Image (cartoon, rainbow, N blue to C red; front, side, top):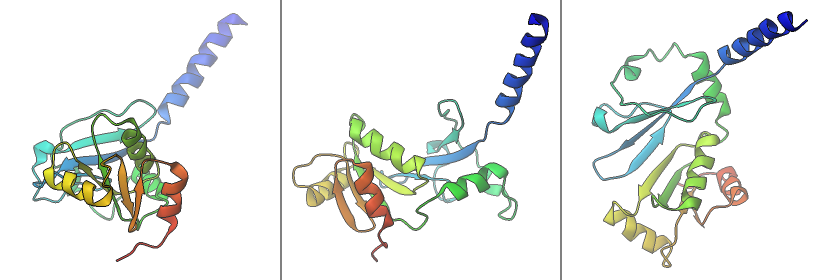
Length: 173
């Protein structure tokens, strides 16, 4: 009985590992110091060395430099992982700008929430950009972070419920 149980367990483990789904998320910084995250490769005008590609899987995300190969993929042929990632997007038309710092735990939670829900956003790091810091002061005179502008609504701090409520509103023009 023991001799049969071990090979059966190994087969189940191998089958489970073979069914991991991957999706890619691109992160890059534009010439104004604005950090962008998207499931689409950056525009051709961006420097390819400044782009990180995150692959979603059961393991923590790994980073690798963008080499431009993903941008040449045909628009008509979508991988199974990409189709699955598109289905996961609950708020495809949401307009989100978020002002963060590198040391802020709530900022990290907010960014993770947006990534998990497939929301495209622009991340402005107020430590690196003086224009982002000035805009943060306009939105929140206290200067606390994160500050998210979701579909025209300004949210200070992070609350999943308030983010979902703002994402469900119609984007303002």
